[in-house]
Length: 191
Ligand code: AMP
Image 1: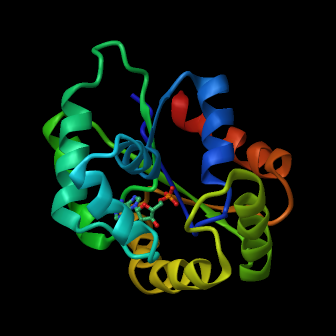
Image 2: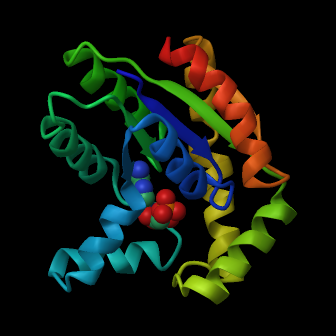
């Protein structure tokens, strides 16, 4: 199985590139943000609690996210070619938990880390906010999400680098340019 952790700050292109990987490599796409937004849309009490956290730009507690991942991995079909983890892990604790979960299933994962400059990211997210209307795509929340990314999520890059399972991708230009770098790496990993 080819399991990919798509890293990078909010607005670095994870969703767009996930769609392209799915089309070209037939992997399953798990966006934890999408799963959480679906829970919010269901109108459940849990969804309301999640909404309070996401709309402030904060992270959902690790224990809740790790449980979500455990449930997801347990239901993967036997013929699954691999998974794109988009938005997970976001903390070192989540990274440890993912390694353990994958180990238990004799699986492995590589991180492809999308890097874009902060001004590029802010412009992309403000545009997405105008078009898609995501409640957390406003300047104040974007800045908070980027601060949390830098403090809490960025150290994950080192975690995978130290395990020799890390690739850094320039995602400043456009999706085509990002994809051409990723495709070369994915071709090697898929062999
Ligand atoms: P995303 O769609 O990946 O930008 O995620 C939107 C929001 O969902 C994030 O800003 C967090 O509040 C929450 N979220 C998504 N994935 C995680 C995770 N792995 N750990 C904690 N919170 C998460």
